[in-house]
Length: 141
Ligand code: IDP
Ligand code: MG
Image (cartoon, rainbow, N blue to C red; front, side, top):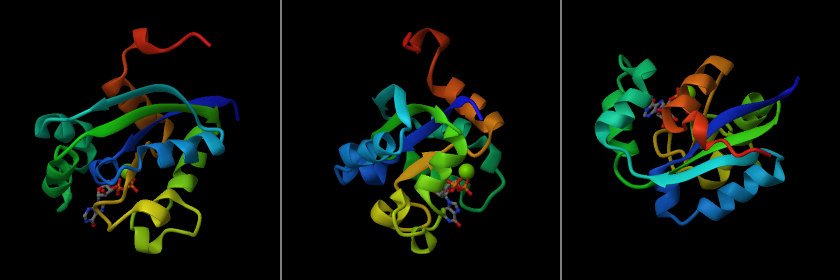
């Protein structure tokens, strides 16, 4: 499979615990190379727009409050098979069920406060990258 792009978010729990550097190091060690990166704080409406696919889930309101509760770091990562390899590196949604060596196992707190987000398919990666990055922001490299 060719090099592809995926969207990663270092969530407010992890930024608040000063884990930004440690988590970016995990991406780089896994050859998931940052090609876009920004620190920002979402409004609740912006979080709701990002997670609209979960609109009917019971955890949607709580999730969107959490995601707008503090700063996040949003990254575009590039690499071979980046979407699936990033999901594998993140680990299971619930940190208690995540495998040893994954980011959520190391840095997640609970099923909501689980340190990181990652696109789960080419379709979601396209939507999510476009939600945060404009075409003009990609470096030529
Ligand atoms: P994912 O992040 O592993 O793809 P999703 O099912 O897409 O998991 O859920 C999106 C986010 O919603 C999760 O990362 C987590 O923060 C939160 N979440 C998922 N399931 C629950 C739950 O059962 N209770 C509370 N929060 C949840
Ligand atoms: Mg998901």
